Image 1: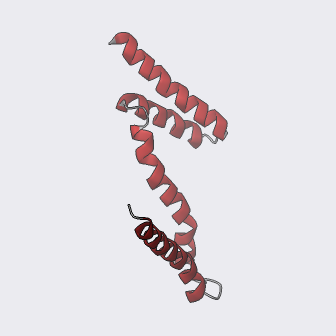
Image 2: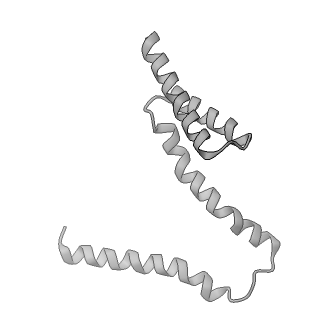
Length: 106
């Protein structure tokens, strides 16, 4: 790729990123009074993080049953409010155990 074209793409991406972040500050100068909009904006980061993370969880091991086992263990432990380290280690261990079990019995 030509260097000049690269910098044009870079400038366009920087401009779009800046506008996405700056427009809400320009349009919404006061405190947001609508409870619906405040609740919506409260959950947006979690929804975006979930949408970005969920596909990677399913395709992480290259083996659907082990990935789903890890996801299930992680969801159950998170539901019972265990620590992040406990959830991560247990979910990884469950995925590993299912993967090893499938290799052993294959």
